[in-house]
Image (cartoon, rainbow, N blue to C red):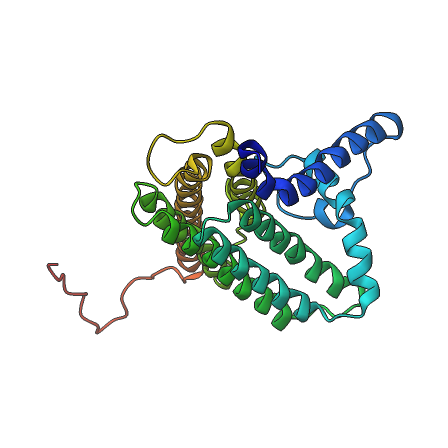
Length: 286
């Protein structure tokens, strides 16, 4: 076989998937320019994002409509979709651990897509429950962790291991701080690197990494420099998001404490003159 063909052939399946989204982007852009942007009501209700603008969200919602229709017509339960998404996320981690980055990247993106459909499916069937939302959030941590553990294993002898572990820590702290804040009655939905941004950034970089290595082979080292760079970005931004949320949480709790203390002081009766026969209060040195 021709060496060039042999080098590019393993990337053919990823090329087909990439072509689907690129053609879809072109069609959606033309359609939006002529008839206006078709807004996705489900995605519009999510927290605002810096990295993923409203146009990309609407494009994403439009592109997954065929998959959404299949899921809706299949009769599958929302929790089953959640489990499938986690399993695919685990497969993505195994794929990148053994160097199949294009496959692993697309599996990770597919896992993220299915994660957006389980809640949508529950709402469409009027089966939204607190237990289902908690189950979804918990299994998301396994999917994210599997991908980052797989990348950590692949880069175990490289400098990229440090940002991979940093990203693993940061991505676990972001949802934890949000859960802690909401348990204390503080809304916490903003941040630079939330889960959609993580899936988009890491998944896209992992998909494109083999293409970059094929065009610009590394002289030494484990390669996949694009994926390594995305891990650096993810480690910095996810930990910055977690620290930002912690700061806002502590500030909100301090303000609440001061407000409660001020209200208690205002509600307390004014101290009158001492009653006859009572000794004046003793001064205690502290």
